[in-house]
Image 1 (cartoon, helix red, strand yellow):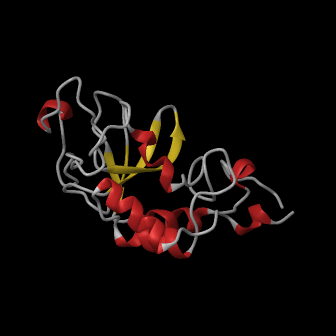
Image 2: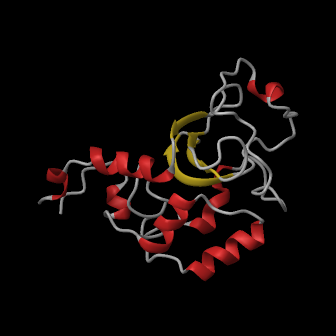
Length: 172
């Protein structure tokens, strides 16, 4: 099989086994969140993470496993950080986003998100689990640039990647 897509040499177009409903419920209880339904359905029925260094078949370097949810955080994981709302409103344009969303220089900007995929150069794709963009997919950004929303939900984001994967790329 030809592995031409970015990240494919690591994940080899494979996903890990789905998580059980009980495993997801345990994660949600531990973090006091409810994962968006589209993502929850995917990781419990289709697959979760995978064999690559960055996870399984998916955009950029691959789909991260749920246990690596915190990879977009700028600070060490803290109690309640996932339950705290992600403050960036999907319908708003920001000039100076940190003060506009009420963040101080020592605050964690990526509360309320699950890391989905690493793009490289420090940019991550995240799924908002709490806050005004709940259920939406966004890209992280540099300190002075606000995160950008890209897709309305996890499945739309993942299906977009599937749509652009050329089947001929997989034939040896």
